[in-house]
Length: 279
Image (tube, rainbow, N blue to C red; front, side, top):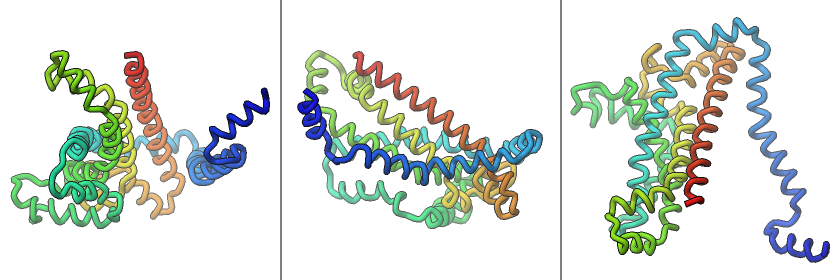
């Protein structure tokens, strides 16, 4: 019986050597992820509680929290709406130039963030090609930051939702229509429940990417303290001033808050998956 079990295990194993691959995985994650993150907490522990509290609650730092988290949330919500529509068009319709548009979705992945920031600033500055047509400022305001974060976060939603749409059989929609459901009812009760976990995943990836974005934002933000200054810029400023402990203290707050928000988003995704599987 043991021999039969071993043979079944070997047949189900694509890559041989579970112990070796697991050990390599844990070693790789420890060096690349766990060790750098642990150093942030280690450096922060060298501060006294009063110094830590004063650093993370400075009015300028709190204002940067509001800008970073607020713009990241808004950009993530925008990407959810438009990213889902783009994924729907790319999956459900065939038209000339479809491959080109599909390739342009991945452009923010390949484009250096500094180049994206300069290009967006040139377009949306008060005298820019697009900004000159608006009666209000876009660049050097929180609106400009949202545009930059939307640009770099769009591929995460599209590439997460697109495979799920491709796996949804059209026969399910036809069956729903044959039972008398309208197109809106079919989307709301049949398609959307299957898309919702993927949408949440895309939102969490875009949100996490936006929180740590620096290159594409630093140019278009204007970096005005208390107004358009993002938290990564404050961390960079403290590093340039050799205030490594202060920088790690602010980074710790960003890290803990990001973990909490991502945990909350994943919990919502788990609930939706559980509800969908029951149905």
